[in-house]
Length: 101
Image (cartoon, rainbow, N blue to C red):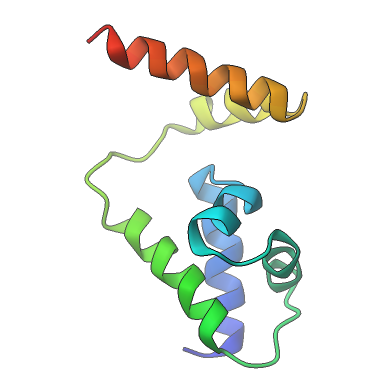
């Protein structure tokens, strides 16, 4: 994969998936600051770490879950702008709702 193609795919994924740089960093084992730099186009070669990130991106693309509606993504984004405490609270609420099924 070319460097520019990777940076474009990364930006597109972050913009449309609802996955944050922090979550992508945790799932791929790559630092959030490196993902941030790449999303700004600061990448010189496509090596081991970008391949790790692409593997995570590809796993989202082939997942059996339907895409999250933009309305939901926007609401979650607004809610979580209050920081990680709000994001943690949202995860707990979702876990409780899943257990009720």
